[in-house]
Amino acid sequence: MENIYSRNGLQAVINASGRMTKLGVSTISKGVGETLVEAAGSYVVIDDLYRYAGKKIGAMAGTEDACVTSSASAGIALAVASLICGGNLTKVKHLYDILPATSKREVILLKGHNVDFGAPIGEMIQLGGGKVVEAGYANGSTLEDIEQAVTENTLAVVFVKSHHCVQKDMVDVQSVIRLANDLNIPCIVDAAAEEDLKIYGAMGADFVCYSGAKAIEGPTSGFTACKTEELADHMRLQYKGIGRAMKVGKENIMGLVKAVEEYLAGERTSPVTKGELEQFGARVGEIEGCRTSIIRDEAGREIYRCKIEFIPELYGMNAKEVVKKLQEGPVAIFTRDYQANNGSIAIDPRPLNSAKELEIIYRRLAQIRNQANGGE
Image: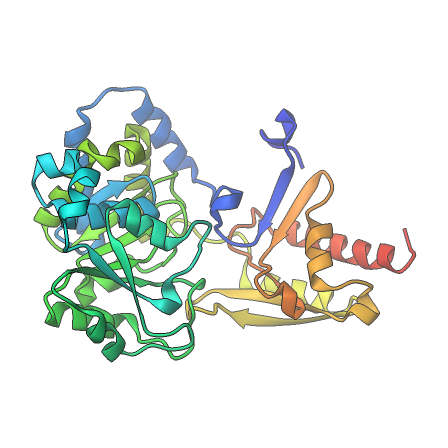
């Protein structure tokens, strides 16, 4: 399995984990790649490009405007900073100088949403000048928890729509957006990996932060769909302040626009079908010590994965040991291992390049079992 990384001495990777930042997120289409190259070969007034792309993407996402960003997490930071600074350029250029004297910077975050997605979400809020105020409990939350946390210093409410978050007994996103609207408090939705680009804006969220490289399969980038042009303008103004450290290049901006167009047109589909995943699961289930099932995404998205449970007494090792073994060798296989400590892993078919990679995973699992039991 040769590619540009293996030719340069890096380990080749089969990504059966998901569109994960640590694995390069996703791959881009030929059309997006051609757009990147063409855009990189010419000059443009960047501020004009920011406005053009924001309007175009906002229209596609069903909102008045949008702000292109380097990532969804950058979108959170810039949205928070924009609420503190508004359209005041002096504040933008002196954000951290004005914070000690700024009382209205409390950002309400459900305790079950205060997660580490590869970096703590609280750091993104604080990067933008916000002060995290937790509401509710790790094992449950209500609208009353949020309402009780509101003070005269409340700047915004952040809702994180992610599998990383606690799902059980948590108040739903639509109710939180409605409450924030009723209280006249801006609502920021972190929808980094979400597949519906219109739903949260239609619910009334003021800012909806998406990754351009996850569900959309674009270049390293992101965008924040904004309820109004003014909100987007205030976010874009942050590029003269902390946003400078998060700037996104002209080629990635145009690549993002192209990727959103392709995504909404349905031009990108997984090369692995659900039927092929089911066949793979049936074969792996025949390996002694493996039990398989097809499961739906824990956050409720229409995504199906193959869950593999390991019986150590029969397979020869536990799930955490299997995860480590799969990542060894010239080709590393990364699986979804959030439940490895409970004895199982999952195969996400979306990032796979072809069904042939399912065959490689099957053979590796059979080989590992063989070796664990004294075979070759």
